Length: 108
Image (cartoon, rainbow, N blue to C red; front, top):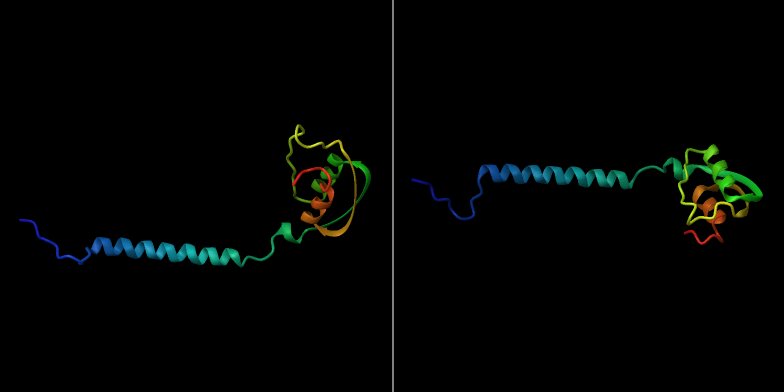
C-alpha cells in the first residue's frame, strides 16, 4: 500500500534540489556583480598617437595593428580601404581614433 502524502509537504529530494538551485543562482548573481565592477581593460586604457596625411585607410589600420594587439577584419566590398584619409591624434583612446578615422566613410 502506498503512502499518501499530505498536501503542502515537500519531499527531501525536492528540498535538496531547491537549495542547490538557490546556491547556483546566488553564485551566478555574485559573479555578475563582480564582473560589472571589473577594472578598465586593455582596450579602455590603450592610447594612440598617430599622424597620417593623405594616407590610405588600410595603411592607417595596419599601423594601429602594429602598435597594439588589435586586429581589424573588414570586407572590401563594403569598406573602401583605398580611400585617402588624414588623421592627426595624440594620446587618444581607440574608440576616439576610429571615430575620427571613419568619420566620413559611412561606417558606424
